[in-house]
Figure 1: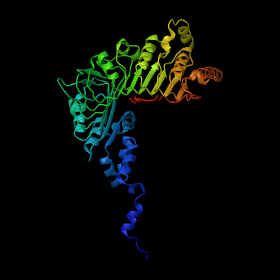
Figure 2: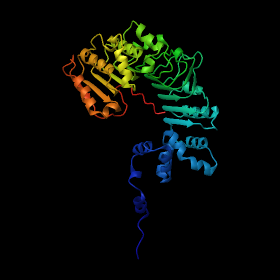
Figure 3: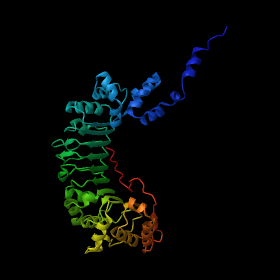
Figure 4: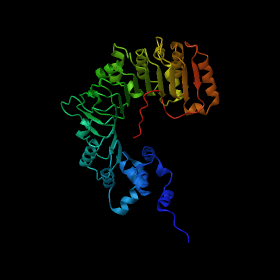
Length: 417
């Protein structure tokens, strides 16, 4: 008569290899999954249930809300209740929390307050909040939370506490996208990276003190810095990202053109959507370059242009010195241009770069779609560029055949909202 195998052997055979992995690797697996799929892993076994309940990286975005629509309809519940339950079941700190709510009719300011209080007491380190559909304020507890290191805010009202000497005490990276700023005068002691995306109201009064600030980005054409504050930051920061629209604004241009001090520490610069046919943008950009003697990397994202308009601008340009660097850029090693249209204005600028950068190593050109489809045009432009004299004997000109994803050299501010 056959005997049953020992109970211990049977249980061992039922356990899969994944369940035997170290707890750290299991958490990494859950981090790679959408939040809903990570939660479903808890159904597999009690081992994975414990991992899920300790999992501290939660993302509630468009994909999550779409995935629970049927469940909400069948169980007469709400997305907020589901999020509440997930939070309340945590058995460990919630280190990363992302909430992107679009037009949620049941959401109240009290919901935002409750969630932020819960997170601020449970070790939150990375917080992303995007709330569309109404005007919500950033809860006061976030300003004093000591554990937050990375903070991304979108479509919120940010009322800085009155008479506060220190806010966001642990924050090293702050990204503000389409926010309303009120009373922006305080110290953010550990801030290293600051970025503005979209149109942020109240920036003209933005004068925070950030003694550790190294990277500053302003990718917007709808609002500008307080000129004196911006000029002061230019003397300190190592990385700068600006859009063509901000370069064309009077306040930013004035801060650059009228400042008597050099951007002595600036090493990396990104200029997004730069219009070579706009004299104001080019004048500001060239002045900024010449005030950055230690610049090592320059990335330019060229704005879309119409060939005839660029041609007319070139023919009627009274002062083409705008497109020339008037002094040697002794430290500049890498120049990268995205969306290169091949206009005479762009070629004029590259001629200046090649002639004034004795340490230049690479000029990387990513062509626009109009050039990719015209091999003959591509060869004519490349032949002209190759004929220009170069201050650096080691300068390598790289003209890519295919257009790649938009990625410049330095700041890498990701707008994933």
